[in-house]
Image 1 (cartoon, rainbow over the protein chains, first blue to last red):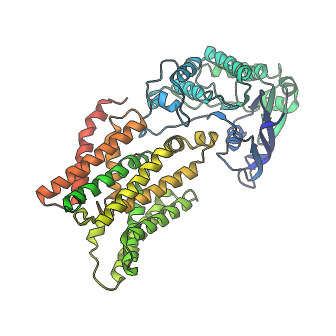
Image 2: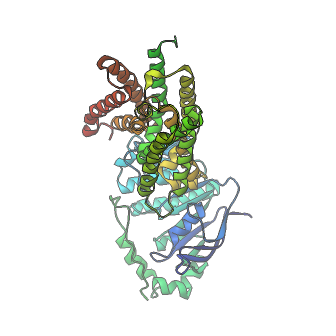
Image 3: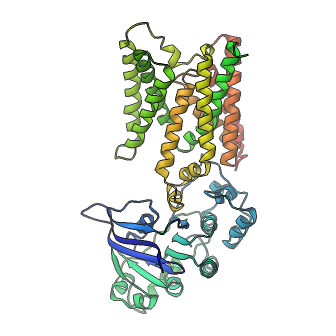
Length: 252
Length: 264
């Protein structure tokens, strides 16, 4: 099977202190690949290299021809001088039908928001609208940068079920960054542990047993203790904050 | 009908408004106002060069405006603060233009004509340039609307959709140069940015979608153009500044909409 995207030998950042070095990855259709790693490990940078928003200093990214990507950025600030309703936002860059738009909003937990101004949404609502937009137009690859920030726990669970369903229905590949490590370990086909370079990668079972992973996320019960503490930090109901400060520094 | 100078003036003002209204929305959304200034100041240099070579003014203005637009586009994001680059280029072009006009031998150039515009002297040939340019601007905006809008909203979302935001920015830059060439005889180089920014700013308060804002801005610009022309005739005032004054009055009139939060 040919890869949806394939990155080889990516290097990014100043020469002496690269943010990323020697990073290669590929995502195939129907595969869920999750990036984990501490703050500042280059996860978002890697995703932005993959979509082409950043140019690597070395290496290259290959996209399958005509690849349709659904992208949810980590944060997005819209200029208040540009008035736009949620419904019209879903039409960019490709117009979608009303029924389709409505269904996408409903499934993302943003039902009934269509007539609202994007600028007037709370952080959680905004995130759900971004999700709804990303899954429109039958994407072949979903690229999600902390997609469930701003969602409460039932919302997160529903979101991951939706991703599973999408993969089943339209066979899309998924490349995402997530801090919900317990979900990552159950919902991913492959996990890539990143810290400026790829520390380890493989199936969830392989990665959670890897020494490099344990060094980053703590030992104990395979990192589970750290995860649960972390999870409680994040049970925010869709508040107004766009940025959460994750404390993922080595605890072991 | 085109024999009447007033009809010609009205059509010239209307054609300019047609292009400036919708493009002005992008100027507001992308904070390109200073960029508009730089491009229109370069136009003065174009006037001097064209007259010095005995060429027609429109191609000269269009040429220097495009050169300026490309220079700014190329320099953008190269480490210098954007407004610093624009400050250098904008005032450099204006100063060089004024010097070049002074150096231009032969008949004395009436510079005021190009600084503040003089729509009452518009010829049939000018009208063809103005409406041709305006049609081009509106046509390109309509053709690339979604791409331009996506790139404006978020460069990252654009990248993910296979749209190159730099290319869309260049398109807008070239359209801006075209509007400068279109508008220089109508409102003059010093007030072109006003005609771009003010109708769009006036339209913001009542608009809920980008399309509505563009249409409203177009309407506001058209009303400003025609009412400004009429006012200039009544009060015997210069046309360009009169048009801008009407636009400012419309903006002030739109403030209650915004303060009341109609478009929330």
